[in-house]
Image (cartoon, rainbow, N blue to C red; front, side, top):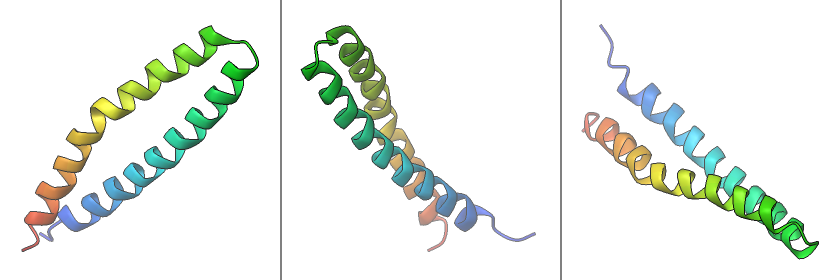
Amino acid sequence: MENKAPAIADALELLYLNQIALRAAIEEISTWVRQRGSVNAHENAMGALATLDTNEDALNAAILRLRSQLL
């Protein structure tokens, strides 16, 4: 049975990079919305971004664990 860790690590890394890009875009739009007076929408978006930040470390740790299996 082949080791699936490299494929899983690659997939997680791509998802992580997508997460970073989406976070940046959402923050940019949220700031634009706040500047136009919708503070509640901005605060809701920032709360969702905090969840992404919280999960970032766990995702990185999983990628590193999978990559370490390759050594």
